[in-house]
Image (tube, rainbow, N blue to C red; front, side, top):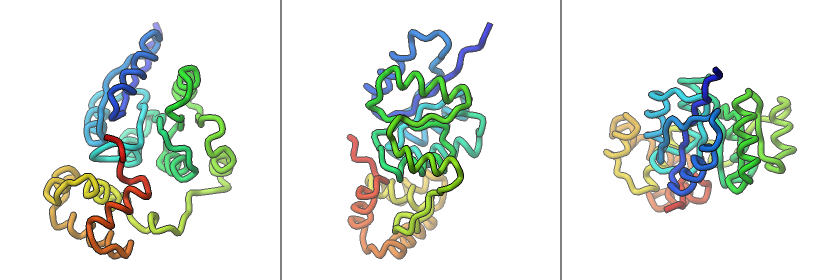
Length: 220
């Protein structure tokens, strides 16, 4: 008998999580092995449950989807990851594939399209929603393009992005240190580096930058 494919759902909106589970319920070849509503919880539970596929939102509290994607692909490269996002811009699509995503689907896709996306990724194929950054992504996958930008956003490191996100969500330095398993002094250093690199001089300016570039979720 063929084993069921184990699927883990990472999404901070309960209604969307429940919708995904309801969509997959009639398909006996799939099994939902877990779910998480923030990035840190996702990493912990995915390491424990070892799913075949992760359905991953990009905009989440505590740790964003890009960070989750990189962490999981580094620790468990065999796990397939299908990004489910509201974002259709080249920047998001290319950054997801730079981080080793196996597929990228838009949240307002039809149920049939999402089922095709899931099946394709589980079969080892790369999936991209039709019309989403098609030409740019085609060039990237052929090795003709990479995600290169001279914008201010790309002068900061992934860890600095994580610190910026948590600062923008209102967390204090001690809370951020605990979440990221680093010292308070290191958090302060990242904060100083952010202000220097971005030429910003207070927390409000950092928060505004984070919202403008999609590093801080506007969802409630």
